[in-house]
Image (tube, rainbow, N blue to C red; front, top):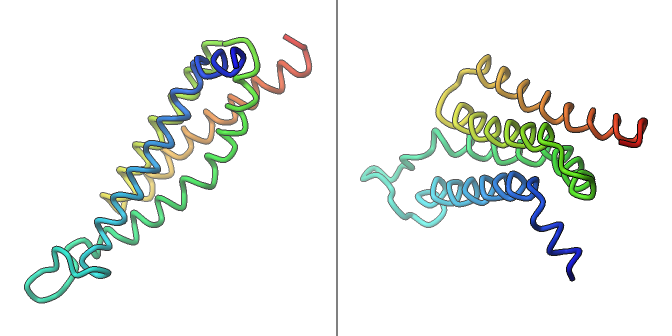
Amino acid sequence: MAQLETLMQHPLIIPMASHVALCAFLYVLLTIARAPTIWGVCRRTDGSNPWAKFEPRISANLSNQFEWPLFFYAAGLLLVHAPVISSSVALAWVFVIGRVLHSLVQILTANVRLRGLIFTINFLAVLGLWGGIAYRSVWAV
């Protein structure tokens, strides 16, 4: 039990939990966006869905949260069993902040270039986490 409590205090748990919170928020947002179509709640007077433009974007973004982030969680789970290195914690936060920004850009705009740039930052942050894991495994730091 004490070992679990120690793991739960690892500084990487908060960024990982923050990403889970983002996913939960996106599920709520998707439910709200689909409500006029599915349940007839908040339909326009003409019967249309006022959120129809955003629903596919939210849905696509939610799907994105289960692709590259898989490697973030795998790295995080490995790193919580290692001594804390501030660069790993910083990279985890870069990833989470990048995921929030990526969600905002994907849902609110059609700017694919900006979304790609933000994804690249997320991509590099996770590669950095895995680079740290590889470094530790080769040099047994």
